Image 1: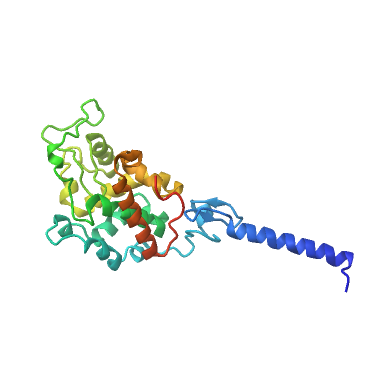
Image 2: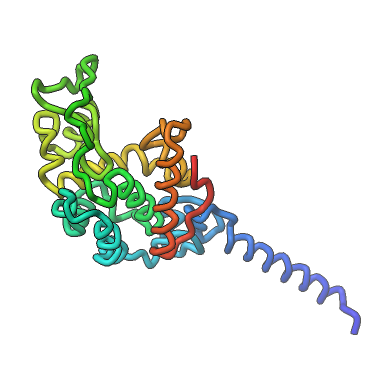
Length: 260
């Protein structure tokens, strides 16, 4: 039966409605970003809060302890040799305590972010084997030109913790934000597991999380730009391998721009 003018107009309207609905539902966002109720891409609660349509929505966000399970944590640290100092130092409990203590980290964290963060933790510490940089005490990490955070005589500012915090100006800035005397007692990062994770989270929130939406490759560059400049392609490959593995374990799409 031929369509009437009224039915034709209705079908055009209906097609347009479904086209707009489909467009808003899928957004075309990077898997790292959320598709908002109105079909826009973003990362804040305006996009990821209810009623977020797709992506790492926080409408049914798992608590941090449901993402970083004991099984997930053990799956990493169990790969470290038994003789590692870090195996008796780093614990899931100390990570959770640090995560819940500061930075509003648990209010915004997603499974994809945890995959990225723990990929770097794994690489920097070799599966939580190392607390401090290997042979770090033999290296000079004192920037004497920095007057804001001057080096304390006799103290070493070599890499410590899950992201290997280094240099006096890093310890000093972290010192101020965490309200800990890290400039005067940098050894705290290597002697207290919760403090160690706090410094790792501090570095992450200030230097890495801001570029997370650009892809995992940008986070590698934020942590070690020399690796991305061709200084260590093996390290880049290792980091991306861990990242993809953890994304698979946590059930999230690793997204684009994985390497740098």
